Length: 394
Ligand SMILES: Cc1cc2nc3c(=O)[nH]c(=O)nc-3n(C[C@H](O)[C@H](O)[C@H](O)COP(=O)(O)OP(=O)(O)OC[C@H]3O[C@@H](n4cnc5c(N)ncnc54)[C@H](O)[C@@H]3O)c2cc1C
Image (cartoon, rainbow, N blue to C red; front, side):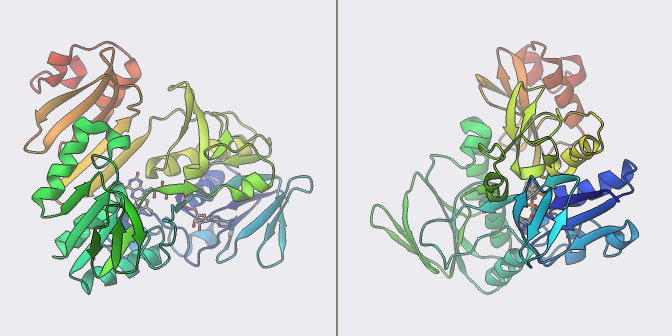
């Protein structure tokens, strides 16, 4: 019997098992994951689940019986420790090994650690979210280091619970690398309007369990400290096995690594994107959801390529948004709608071609935004800014 092994039981790993069965694979599937819980989705961990608005069960990718019903050998609580490519074997932390005909790596990311901040909170796993939920319920002051998506979502959850939050960010604006300064100011205004002490351009020196020292000598105290300074792809397994690794595991557009029998998907995959004509490594839910079907096709000997645009969403207070595209190289931003009222679409343009769009509290527009990006056609910025002219007529 042919065995396919998947390492990493996050969204990408679980969806890969599903895609292999959907595409007719009837061999053995072994899904190895170091977490004790069956695969779950992470977005609720900083949003509804953290705020107590969603049940634990709603985070899981599949129901508890799905793995048995689909003949997927789910091995929880055991890490893969090495890949023996010559022997086509994955070694596990319990001393056993599994042979593979094809292997998919979906080991995801881990939070970047601030040196010496062992006593601070970090958020990646469901247990982290539960710990932070309890901290929010029992604290009156929280420090969040890092004004990225996760830091700001936790900030919004803490404010909703009445906790005073100080956000410490080294950059001059929140989210600046993700969305550029024109749109970042929307988030700065949003958090300040919701009572957050947002301190930008500050450099953190030392992090304790309940206080943070800044380089300028200021000490900020609180009941707890969350470090949310980004994530790094878990590539050690791939690297130790001699696969090509550079800001993630290097894969072609079919998600195949430098070893033809090994594929990678989700946060770790630094993939050639035919539409963008460059490599992209995307730490977003939609990527982990959709890449596995392409990897599964390749594992089964077919040919498919992944050329989706990066897509992302976030909810903070009463602001919900979706973002699609890649802003790299933009030369102007066009706003369409009510920016102060936080009901608008932002477009990032280069040479009047739409690179990316973000709809804020406006829904069902991702498809026309995507079509504009994919068309690569030049648009008239004034018409684009005019909400009376449909996106389909740009
Ligand atoms: C709090 C939070 C909120 C988020 N919110 C959003 C959002 O709103 N929108 C959005 O688009 N994205 C969001 N993301 C990002 C999104 O969750 C990730 O892009 C997605 O989880 C990536 O899935 P993955 O399967 O590649 O990796 P992961 O979900 O990280 O899963 C990888 C799994 O592999 C396991 N593993 C690692 N190494 C080994 C090993 N050697 N052996 C066995 N198992 C191993 C890990 O423990 C983990 O369980 C959020 C992320 C977090 C943490």
